Amino acid sequence: MKLAIASDHGGFHLKNSILRLLASRKIEYVDLGVTSEDSVDYPDYAAQLAQKVGKGEVDGGILVCGTGIGMAITANKFKGVRAAVVTDPFTAQMSKEHNDANVIALGGRVLDEAKAGATVQAWLDAKFEGGRHERRLEKIAEIENKNFK
Image 1 (cartoon, rainbow, N blue to C red):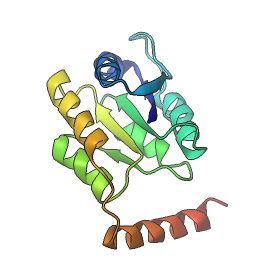
Image 2 (spheres, helix red, strand yellow; image 1 turned 120 degrees about the vertical axis):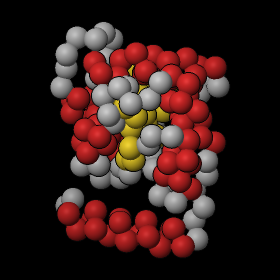
Image 3 (cartoon, one colour; image 1 turned 135 degrees about the horizontal axis):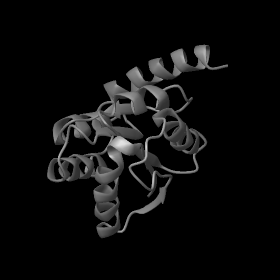
Image 4 (cartoon, rainbow, N blue to C red; image 1 turned 90 degrees about the vertical axis):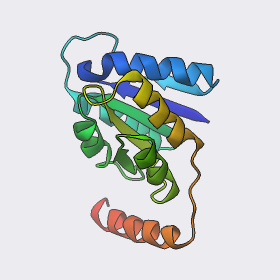
């Protein structure tokens, strides 16, 4: 598994904590920034990550901004990306098991390091269930194909 990870200034510290978690699990990753708390525009970083996911250059991605919301909105503008804002281990698990989310977005101003770590681990450990959920993802793909020509 190879992941991309990116944050804005609001997610900088939490991103660094998640990087340590990924390294401890020996998960390969590409860090797309940021490298400081200097103010940046989150869409620039979310777009870089979403392009890599959409093109299949990485298997998935983790985005971190103040709330996760802006990053997820941006990432979902890219074909092939299913980004979910996750706030706890249960939402992370369900995002993968039911929606096959290939990107998660977390809030650096919402989650502390411990809860964010547990949330990321739940997403990493979850598996897409398929079955009835596959039919729903096919419907999402049909909508995406109509709107992203």
